[in-house]
Length: 397
Image (cartoon, rainbow, N blue to C red; front, top):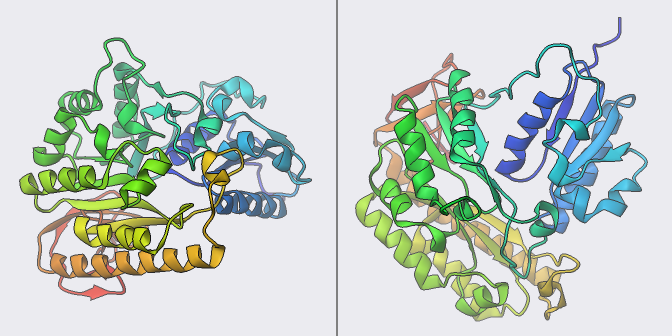
């Protein structure tokens, strides 16, 4: 007897893609023999992973209809369309529209997006109005668009009804939320509305933020609201002002330092994450040292390190490039420094009282996003107090 057909969505890249993949799956008939690759194009390496995922999906589901959406489906459209494994491309801006998929629709109403993670991702914003010189994402996502407060509240309510103990607000440029809405409400006002409307919500977490655009109300919530997780991830990108200027970022190094110092003065247990790019064009040894040093200065314990790769059509691709071997070596140094700072931070967590949200793999996340081993038999989604006494290969237990 043959295996039943089942729709599948493979998600690559950012947290926004994860949230959107759950919505895409809810639009498809459960019995559809269809595989969707929700792609990423943030770097050349991300595009390579997308192509690998397409080939693997075709090997595993040779008879399925294989469609590709996401940023790479727009930015690398011709190359992906030429792949023999691909049956079609769905524009990134249309992927949440049921009409785009042209699949059999079941008689019953579409099922709601499943909360397949203990942390439910809610995409409150999409697109970007900025023009960072290294970035192609605006080409794949379009202009910044915000969900209205009622729509956000409805999505949060749906996830809470499904039992999600933690909500993560995500987007392409989350801090730009509200600028396209009447009266231009601030992101802080949205977060306050969620917390006020859902007193039963136990944990609210933010995805990557542009630190210089954090409004006063959001700052106050990070500083003093217990249900707001003490974990901030900054779209920092570099630690040297001239490189930041050449990236067309909107902050300086001192802006980031002041923000973190101000938050930690009010909430000492705040954990900081950051995106950092190694080997941006024109980066010399002194600039790289500034990039290294900001890891220790901000105590960055959740670091996402990206070796720079030129993206066609971006201004940075036309700047004087750093050679690939140097980029690779500098990225390795940045990762080593994050690992050193992170290990020191994890040692400080020993003996501390942590509240851990259990995942499905025998571990969980504390409020500060430290990974912690949970007792055998702990049900995913439970929040339990723990006091770790040892550290084993980066895992508190």
